[in-house]
Length: 606
Ligand SMILES: Nc1ncnc2c1ncn2[C@@H]1O[C@H](COP(=O)(O)OP(=O)(O)OC[C@H]2O[C@@H]([n+]3cccc(C(=O)O)c3)[C@H](O)[C@@H]2O)[C@@H](O)[C@H]1O
Ligand SMILES: Nc1ncnc2c1ncn2[C@@H]1O[C@H](COP(=O)(O)OP(=O)(O)OP(=O)(O)O)[C@@H](O)[C@H]1O
Ligand SMILES: NC(=O)CC[C@H](N)C(=O)O
Image 1 (cartoon, rainbow, N blue to C red):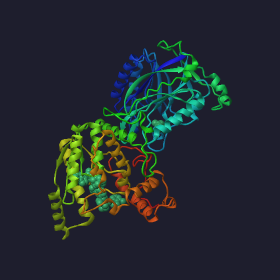
Image 2: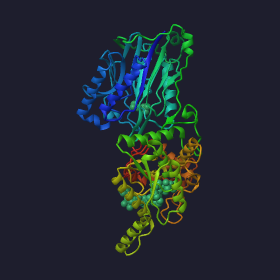
Image 3: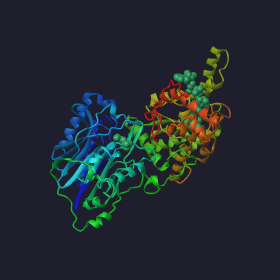
Image 4: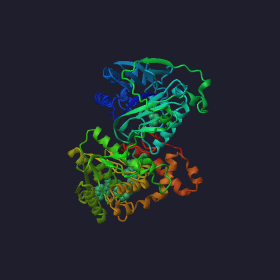
């Protein structure tokens, strides 16, 4: 029985930080050697981080990544490595190197470049067109693919499924989206069973601007069964015995993936196996077919273990309204990781949140504390004459629960000075939206001043429903550096709060915050549903117009009120300019505002 002791390095690489990434690889190799791994696989573009975007247009950057590759090569005297890098020859390629014996044994170019959703790879790379190659690592036949390559049964997987490969290594930088892991597992299981080959899928972890990489690396056997997995949202270097039993008979009787008619010859690259193979004579092949080595770990974030089932996404909380796949137990840690990495990778010691006593800022504050710890988070209350006393007491209570500092700065005098100044110029007090938005702008100005003085990053609190409809004040509550819940519809804001309270085992986010009607408190008795449809009506319409790209008429045909649909659709169109000026934030859905949805501001289509 052939066995390959495989190391999976599911690590958080930083875009552009080539030296730091190299040091991380060096430490991972030391750990992998300690675990007796023979071959360690690293994620896509580990050396540069993903996505490197226009950094790769700088020749010096590409050269630095090649220098780092040479340094990795020198580290492989007694271990084999697959690592992602930017290759440069006639053009640039998104590439993987198989390195062992201090030598680059083979270079694989990504053949299928994703250029949809958040991906722009055709802007930077040329698709690989080399004949498929297989590494003969001793007696183990290894194919190498890069992320998108494996999503198609064509491309390199067609050749690798021809019976000449035992295991396909697939290195990834696959960003999190709600429900994505189920999609990945279905696809990988199919690919493995159809090709009668094992698949080792290693993914990046960590936040990069709007993207969050969730790790969730997995290994499948040639029956398409999951035989191992790494944690979600956490770094780890694991070692794994991949048993490679005889597959010949399965291929003869298995109707799937009959590649007998394909003309396919893989070029072979023979590589000395530097470490003696692991073998266990007591395991017969029947037993091995049955073996399931689930290395499934519980969901962990910020040192706390979820009380949910082992695999977060199985414990799906059904959404009250239909907004597509949503599971708070995977989205919450994604937001925490995205926020932590944005703050830390951009060098901020602390963050600041304008805390109103409303649910949005309560959730953002809670995420910030989970991401960074209470001592690095400060809440600022800035009431005016329109703020209710309950709002201030709710803000105080949540800060007490979270252990954060709360500072109260009344802005009413400043607000009044602005009104007086404007009145002296206009001849009357402005009133209406002008007066309402002034309060928000005073808050934004104050938060930015405190940020300048204290060096803390301001977290904004707008949710996806507000962003979609433009229900926010430009240079007011949109002022700040990172928009933590920008891809969370208001309905899910409540579900995330409830999820977090369940984890805490008590009302960490006080019930009074969750139960009050949403209000911007910019005029007496103001409520969001004075201006917008109630969120249980608004969110499903937004989901269909935005996430599903449906036309107004199609949404109306589904039975939604025509007047409401028309109003919502024009709010979406009219507020594109506001979204363009909004800060970046964590992307959770397949249609986040940002790279996923690029709409013209000036737009005559209705
Ligand atoms: N196409 C375009 N391209 C570039 N700029 C454009 C533009 N259209 C308008 N504008 C500009 O944008 C301005 C209007 O935008 P803006 O000033 O934001 O004001 P606006 O969108 O009219 O009002 C903000 C709304 O957000 C609500 N709200 C909800 C929740 C929280 C908060 C809060 O602040 O705490 C506020 C508030 O009650 C109000 O209904 C115009 O005066 C114009 O200068
Ligand atoms: N009194 C206040 N003190 C501090 N910040 C405030 C205050 N009022 C509003 N803000 C800031 O402006 C943001 C926008 O207000 P908004 O009312 O939309 O959100 P919220 O109060 O958190 O939640 P909800 O919309 O459910 O009431 C708040 O999240 C908060 O950051
Ligand atoms: N980096 C990539 O090629 C990512 C594309 C891929 N389909 C994914 O998101 O998983």
